Length: 90
Image (tube, rainbow, N blue to C red; front, side, top):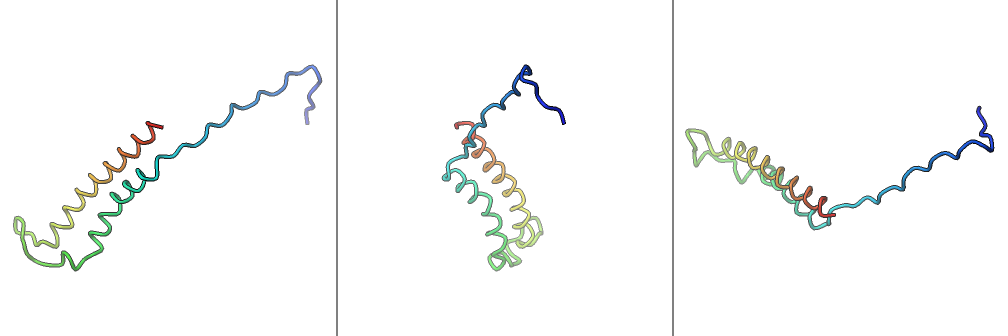
């Protein structure tokens, strides 16, 4: 174990830690609602468990779920953008 002599320089202190800033809870609530909407829409199966209306020959049951894949991607992007903007403002 090395001991420090009285002539050696003192170890450098680490820079002070920056406080963690989080986005407003309102922004996080909006982002959370955007992200949970697809789950609610798709877990309520009785609302779309039907054959008509058909789209290009596909029953409603199938094209409704596929539409939510696209909508979910869009909602996830919007939630990401609003959270990032809120972080940049702080």
